[in-house]
Image (cartoon, rainbow, N blue to C red; front, side, top):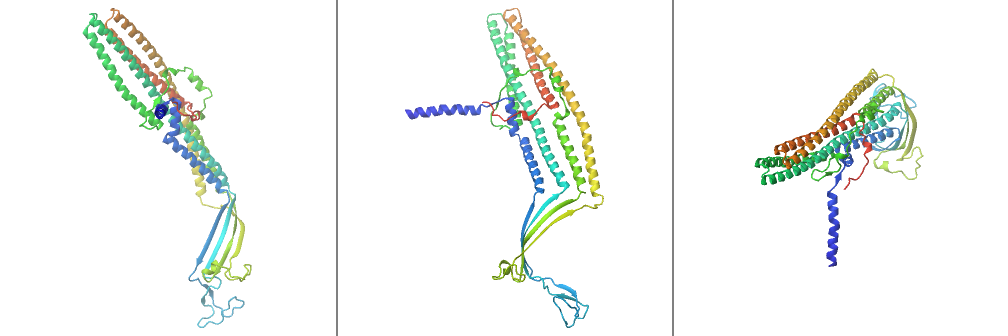
Length: 483
């Protein structure tokens, strides 16, 4: 009995956890956070950031000591000969030839290689250090600016993801309100149908009144079913924008009643407005600085550069391959004539490279970079005009949507009042059923127009936020969706 009780208790604990895990609800901020963490575009942008950081480290590494080691073993089955003019009277030669039958003075002779053994070995290490190079200094600045451009690109991607996710979220929210509206209308018309049927049974209404009301109710139910299918598509779009699994359910939290229309929004946005608030301007400014650094890099190519080096190692020669890998016992390596010994060598120095003449290549490359900078400067004026036009268009659109929303809200309130009064009059026997159905139709049309206007106002507000650079990804910190 105790075991059964423990099993039931475990089941009771597990079931709520399973339900809670599946019934996640997402607010607008939750949807945006999820999208910023999971969309492929943002993930790839983050990878580009890491690539840019790697490029910066790679550039820094150029200025660090470059150390290379090498080991070389060479076998020459046939050594090359030395060539000289034969002179039997030459004196002081290291290898006097004497008289050679058949060879006379002035003939070219091929002498055996007296200075090289068939087998040789070398093991050494070389250290190169950049001492001064203007191109390297410019490259350091350019690499950091390149990293900044990657971060700007990520921000631009995140802004687009936030915009798309917010629009999809509000579409779902508006549709949820419309579904609730359908439910309320169906309940109201169903109540009207029962009232009309009761009046018909008592002789105060006609069969056509009942039929007319029944048709209205059937149409509402059919429209609600169709709208539920459209809502499924809206949820699918939201999942797509969030990169949320399509086969998993999702629910949104929030209410349109929480939204407030701000008539002073334009004045608030105009205060402190600057083109630099737009990510497009920031990216173009970063590209300009990159191009200016490219010009400096082209100029630095005509500047001298200084490098230092240290080289050290050991080398040997031997008539046999095996002799390379051993040292004769009893012979000091310092002995000048020690056989089969490895002898050390070293060198230290600096290299100064001074570009003198390269034709017209450097000058033309510099000119090309300057012209590219001129193109970027021209884009600034074009971008400012585009931003001004975007602000003007979205401001007018938002203003119009606010006026339309106010008008449609007033119309909906009036239609609700007319529908309520006509129903009361019908129930009291001083009105007709056709007046009630007409009032219900007018109310539904007013409600549809109101929610369409509300959706337009929300979307135009998002567009206006983007135009003024008010969509800031940094405002969305990582958080866990509410359950």
